[in-house]
Amino acid sequence: MDVPELTAALYRHLAATEQLPLDPVANRWLGEAQAVAADIATSDVTPAVAIDRAATVVQLLESTGDIDNPEASEHVATSLTLARELAARA
Image (cartoon, rainbow, N blue to C red; front, side, top):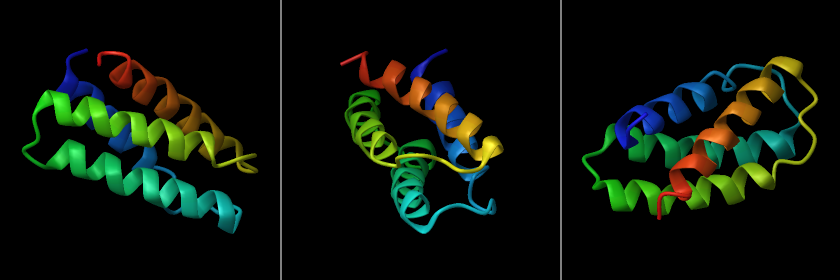
């Protein structure tokens, strides 16, 4: 996938967790990660900026801790993989 496809997929997976019942602490980290992902997916940023911000998403997702919802956990795992792939392009 190219950078725009990766950023779109990353945002979709994080947005899918928005309405799921989650621990408030994990939800806060996911909300921050989703905001960054939305910015890089929907704004006119350069691929270099998207790649740089993907590293921030990785840090945020790694801070979520235990996700107590199986559906959300799958989306977070996929999001983390996508964010890491983007960040690795630096």
